[in-house]
Image (cartoon, rainbow, N blue to C red; front, side, top):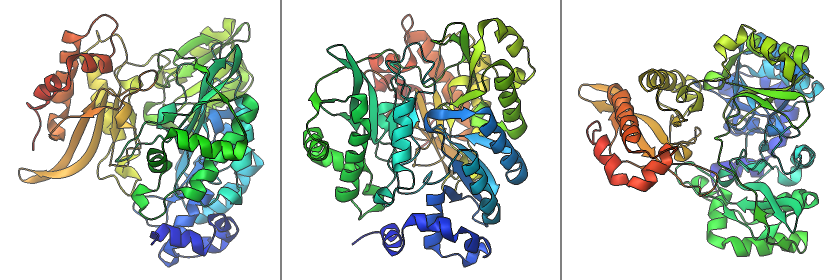
Length: 520
């Protein structure tokens, strides 16, 4: 017995929707078959709340690469169809909300003409490829991953051999030692490694979050750059042919990997690729949380990149235009998006950084944000998502701004992620403090409530945050966060991040703090 989504995919390949889009655009939303609403995801088009005929279109930006000219196309489309707003996602893509299907008929060809694509940005397919936003300019990268990202991206894009996977398939390719690609929460991730002086990768497989998070497990291979596409194809083939298709909440690759084990998965990969080298030593450095704020030297002499904070990943279209024009005026017209929902300008001459930062746009988009506001992440929330019962973006900013003001002495990032439902799109499991929102009756009113987890991180020694018992009502949430921060400041050792303090001191201590604020 397969689930409803599998039946829809059996009836018609999702990529067929691209040809049918003009006809669908002429229908009232209520007249569109639910299977076609699902298949619209294969075009990168997702029905948004309140399901009244408005959608988002998600545009793939592999490894966050974006030219100024492409950014201006996105700006024009957002201004014409998306209320002048653009969102940077937690996987380096961008989204334009509030479009109709008639709008989409115009949008998709204009994206293609600009060298952009929304095809398979959603759906049970290989999604956009996450990677190092500094690829090609990174002084620390083991090798330039841009050609590999492009090769893998082009191989999977619109490839009908992989347009019907059991669920979404997320790939990360990065040669940055700071785990810029968040390796262990991806279905397949390539991370930098050396073997006998040769630069290449080791791979992790089977990661994922949602209601049942799994950390990806390491495969035994040392993978040469020329072998990356073949390994990615082999893993996708294994997922397609042997992945589970019965219960929708049990179809991700992580469940198959957990059942088979890493060695059996490795055997099945080599059955397709041929023998691969074993071994390799990962090249690692402390996790940077996917943040690249401030001015830093590129590996190209005399040039810098400038990392900018975009609050909640939400940027006005005209502000993105301003950044595109700055990238052209001061650099070579290149920008990057990050999986922390921020923006980077590349190729700024060392002597021009002062003039660049003098621009008024940096008052709204700082290069040195607060240690709470600058390191928080949120999902879309109930503004657009059909699953989230609470508002997330503005509430999280209110909370983190208050914490920045209350604790100027914190001195290092403290990451708070707020997600609006169990799907965990804001990745609370890898936050110092992860919040999952819901609604419940407290006294006479139904109000937002939150469950908490603490102590998550990626990079070396990756570990998921551990849940605290009880729920906290919205009016008590800031008080609880302040109490947790105060306890951290009292207990931390020199230079110790929040998650390390939690691991050293034990969960019981932190539960005792939470008990003063939580309800059953």
